[in-house]
Image 1: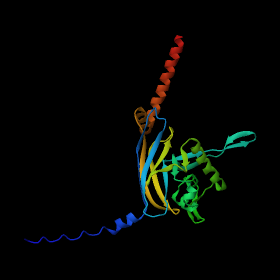
Image 2: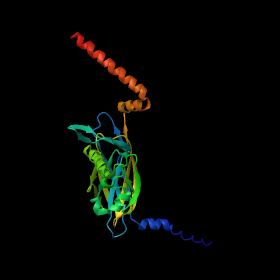
Image 3: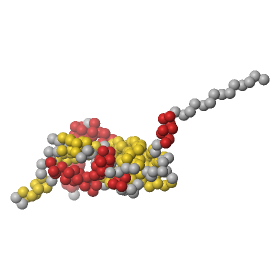
Image 4: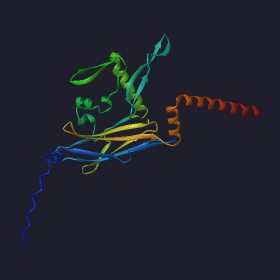
Length: 266
């Protein structure tokens, strides 16, 4: 018999794979990455689920952040002048998230320190809102990009007003117990989108923290879009605004004329 040569031993796996498996990591997904808005839309519940791989003995925390498309925000303040209430000079923030929600396994302050949360812009207190015009950024207390606005000491008060108004509208929320482990390493988070949630592309981040520091992140996207007649009207208004305005005027004039004819007959 002719001896059959032995097969060479299989090469060891790449070192990158071994290192990856030795480090904590998080993987996540959405049950529905596309939310459809129609005339009967009353809100939606976004379910985010995932798994944590933690080969160490150090416990880990999961933080979910969902941020909607940025949009400018215009604010005015009521001032009493000579017994009359007048609007102050308007303040226009160049951009703030149209929707912002966080969910975590426990309060954010217990997961990471102030500086870490500020650098990652996690939480309503650390939310990045583009400042009004005539602003500059500096480094203070070891934190970069601290905004110094023409509003001076009132800047933080105006910023808090943005967050307070958005929270009242249900567009900003924070749930310190919104992430629940349903099994060993498996977690789930439910985030509610109100009926007033704006359309556009949303960004979702799932952070894994250990000892107060981020060790892994999973990035997801979600789309909120109009469907049916609402989408057609919206597209018509945004793509041909002049024609949409003309049609609206003609429609209003026709409705007024029809109403007057009906009342005359009576």
